[in-house]
Length: 367
Image (cartoon, rainbow, N blue to C red; front, side):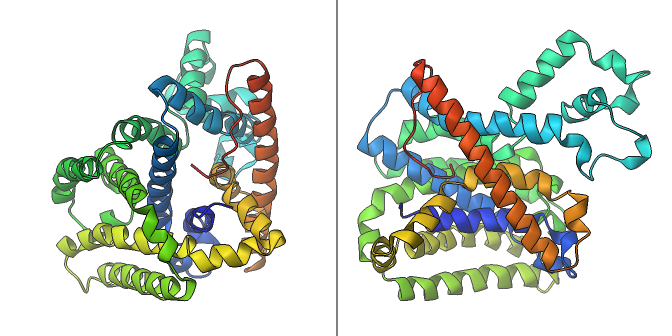
């Protein structure tokens, strides 16, 4: 098992949980997508940088490997959960009547049937080709995939260079980050991804990806970690992060202090990586193949969990179950669907590899 598996599992749980505010009796328990996404970007940068430092690749080969890891699951997930099962989920308004496949396509591929004299007029061949490409190829309906494919280029550029390159990239990203932050007007914008401009969240994700590249320069430090010590540090940093978030939500701290959340994410990710990579924890698990296998399996499933959870959060039959059964049922359904998606996507990878279209990847990380 890899030393980032536990951290990828934590990120997947946080992201899924953040979409369940309306599933809990108190929505305050539906946290923390910001931390989960930040971990995803940082660990993707960390893993990609380590891979490049151990086995340098040209840009074409590098992207070929990355795309062959991501896109079988991304495309199959979009086809199954968007195009086939889309009409079954709660976020299609019932008031608009029965949804034919044409309506589902129009809805999910970016069209708005209500804005046309007749929605059939939008489903021209050219329209469908454009929208199939933009939703199933690029940009993906999964924001993480859209952004990480951009970040991979910069990771490839800086990964094998000195430590000052990722540091410089992080500092440069603070220019748009700071610009958009100064334009924000209320504390709720700190917590709602849609309320700050696209450029703000793009620059923030880029910073964490570059931070992951930076951490790849210091892997020797991970060999000296101890589980209980790192656990205490991780709990301390997470308490500091959530405590700051609570104080901001209650307006006990002024709006400018909200930027502390983003600065706190750096040491939080660092101590969580040390916790996940604790030398004695890894040694303990490696002596127990069953538990090591469970952790490796779940850690390698996080991309598929990220894809499938986005749709199960709207599943009416699950949401109508009593609490806390509905939470357990949702996570179970996501796990089963993600496993099936991974099995199918690996079949596609092997099929393409036999035809020399793409390599079969041994790596199982979520990013």
